[in-house]
Length: 466
Image (cartoon, rainbow, N blue to C red; front, side, top):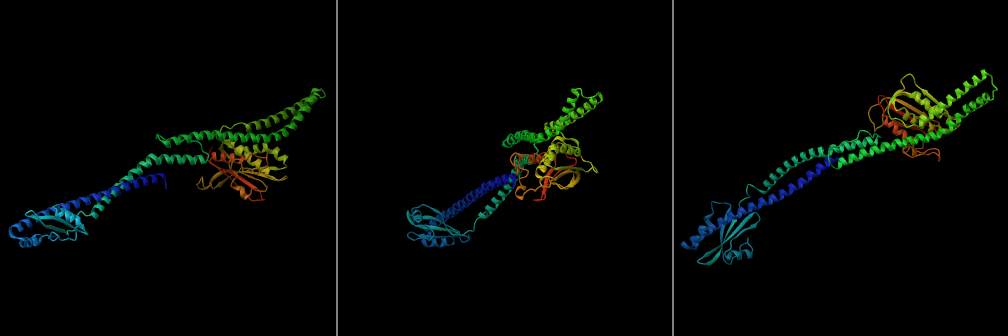
């Protein structure tokens, strides 16, 4: 149940409890008022009958008074009246109440089942002669308890509906809107999107939470960039040995040719030839060093139209010395029948390709082949992105290693998870690659069978930039 529904339900439930209490006390109050009115009426009737009975007794005697008493209330079917001599015990009055009545104190409202009994003392010439008993058999008042309850419940129902509508509207405005924005922000954070800060204008705890989430996103973005750069520098360290090997041959050329020119043992034509060889070697070394420095440099994060095929080829060239050292062949296949250009951050995508190729080379046995394919095809987004299949620029990196164990498959993209030997990897490469691809609106996945190798695939939807 959503928080707005919970708050509304809680408020309405509280309102219903208050209304239920109001109904209970209202019924008691109304019932007590009806009973009080009935007692007053019965007492007035009993007093009037007592006065008539006493007067008739005095004027015409006891028998006449009794006869008149028997016919006094005949027109009223609901009322019965009788004279109870002193010493008799009526059925509907306690001895204590009878004693009070005999002492001249009227006793009203003695109830038995649905009937009411009222007792009025009688006195003749100063002597107590008994009490008059008035039995009220009248049905309940038209304003019965059930009617009171129905009216009260109708009022409570109307108030509950009004309260529910007001509570729902106010909760939606005061809480629901803010919570929805915070949920959307947390979902973007889960996808690695730290942009679009949440803006809540309310001066409450939810607005404070939004500000903290915005500040957290700033810190996470900074940390993520530092993590990615640290991963690049780690890769640079791995590339250093290959670069040193690549620089060895042109340095030998430069050294040998320069020494021969310096000794004067060459003719002018040979000197020019050697100078050209030195210049070519220097250009080659400069290109290698520039490529390494460019890889190590922090990226701008700005997406631009990039030839991904050329980018992949350049990344592979940078890694080729490491592959050769392991006797692994790296092959790049670029499908030029369709466009392989995409709006991406070239440096970041190069980092993804480098991480995937480095892993593939390290996972492959000696003499094996790693194949890269750059092509356009339709791909179905994962469930957390959703939507139909769409055209994507895809990069596949396939090796022929031992594959990924089933128990490790769920942890492949987790930071610091690695199955490599100590010194071989930090466990950051795939986690960083996953974040970079998601920043570009794409996704990364793998297909692996134990003993048959692994293929990592990157899909960047057309028209989506970083």
